[in-house]
Image (tube, rainbow, N blue to C red):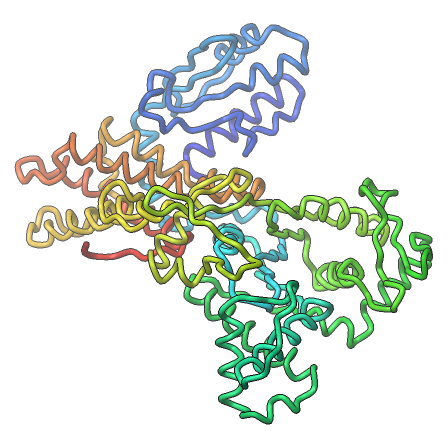
Length: 550
């Protein structure tokens, strides 16, 4: 444990022993490192444990706070002050920061990971899962980056997260795809046929038809309907994979819905629900008693014509994930799928799997603004801005950062004009420039022997001016652990932007290289290295490039 965690551990034990309660201080916001320059008068560590205990013990919080101040002590805590209704502000001795910095520098990335004694979990993380009936559009970029960065964080700190794409390659949408492609082929070959209103109208279908004719000639019209379905699905799925690759996303599993129709697992799951008494027949269809689990209506599993619905496939798919050993299922979905959560939770209970943890992350709409105006999009008309378009115009780095730089349940407005700027106004440019600056500073010391080989022992030369940045760097550890439980990946972009701002401000106020004050310079160069290492870690988690020059 680092020194902050040691203080936290000692404080937790003190609370438990003194008050006979389990304080649950870790990751509950009850013991936080203060890295806010505007709040430095409130100490280095803040805790609201007295207010929490007041509710449990029916005592005034200020009375409890005073008891804690009188009873708790630690070698690295200089003093504890009470503020307001009972907040506790801890002021640390200077050596605490030097020890913390030494541990961070020595541990490198391992400093930010889980302790070996903390339990590891196995996550199944499903996201994007777009139908293979067209290119990924503007909105898919948001769900993609949320899921991808969450997977990066979970795996980085020590969990096991499997990224999974569910391919909806069975059912009516694939039949519609085949019909749309066949008609486009007929049109390209001079036939007077019209596309139905419900068909896929995008320009990509015309391009796909031209490609299909180039490969198979006029004889393509002799092919069965299944050929057009398979051809369209295969090529559009490949396009989706290429788009995701360009976006920096790689999936561990591409799971085909069609395989569950073939191997009988959907039918078996339906039968399992039937035996448990949660199905009934009405109007020639087979229904799941979804309302018994809070859904707004019962759901059809089999239509009157015998075709299975996507709800039926959901049953088998969830069972498959669980049987593969996932402790927690996470699904990233657009906001228009809110009823989906109730349905899936109900299916788990009906399958007697109610103890299985299932979390769904909903994200709001994405709008694009260009030249001060919102870009109008219509899926039906086929004029949809694709994710490929966004990546091509602004680049992968900017696309990833901009898509993540807002809380998932808030609407996101993608400002194309800002995304294209190469100035400090663009947060990606600003962050990358901070990273480049750290490298430039360190490179300047290459020819100064007294400033060579900065190492962990140089933590002894750190002063008070470095404490705020050290606290900010150290706070990344708790931030990553909180992301692993609340899935708020957007805070990672906030963090790296704030770190860059704090570093630029520090550099403007403090002379880092001073050959007349070697010890101070070594301490400050030590800090620059720490900032650089931390920014590198975060940019790797975001999968944003780390340029050496700009």
